[in-house]
Length: 336
Image 1 (spheres, rainbow, N blue to C red):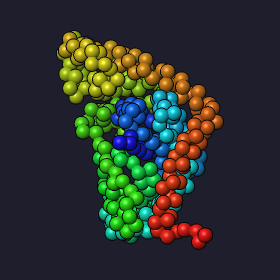
Image 2: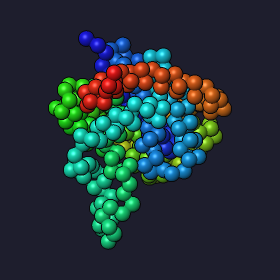
Image 3: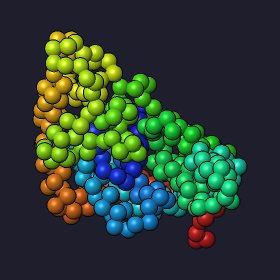
């Protein structure tokens, strides 16, 4: 039995924060080290163009996100790491899939429906501001997945519908042209332990402006941690770790033994300032080496480019073979 293929798409926008690291980057890199898994990681830069038309921002974001994953320990000898835009076979597959995808299916996509609803509520034309990039996003996502016949695709709950659509599109193509695609499965975290709280106690998210950037300087990291909202309990008063953002973040980086010790300190009334100091020391100790590697990579874009080009070569070899079969299947063959 062959290895299970796991494909992870990486959004190339925004500055990575501690929540991204705990919820996505760290677990994905750990999972990629499994011997029974073949992992593909790609920078979803075509998808980024749907929302961003600033070339410099697109360029910088791709660089920062690539450097982040490499600095955090992604082993590119074991996993295939590439940019979506470096794989022309994905674009070709996108068209082949578009030609078998019903418009009615795309009409049901959450992002499109949300845009239509917002327009209607504002008294505008239902399709005002809706690009074909937004409307056809699920087909491109299906192409990302099916180009490598991925078995599993780790996603957030808001992306489950897109995996279901990829399955529908793949099944339709298989029905018309024979069995070419594996039907992918969504992998969603079963619990909320990987969802980190932000400075204000809500989910850490750029949209809430409550994040702590992953590779801030030591000074900025300490300043960010000191901004975490706490209650007014004085030093010496017992504190409940459940619901505490400081404890929540500490637990995400600590061992079981360290977590138990901090839980005891909360019961004994540790001062918030001391708790934040210990949180800073814990996180900074784990991120200082990756931070240094990140800064080295950002100063040497050619090193990142070489890694991505090598990854693209590996990815294209796989995708090219599939596209050749699909061309034959749909009748796009040479006459000789």
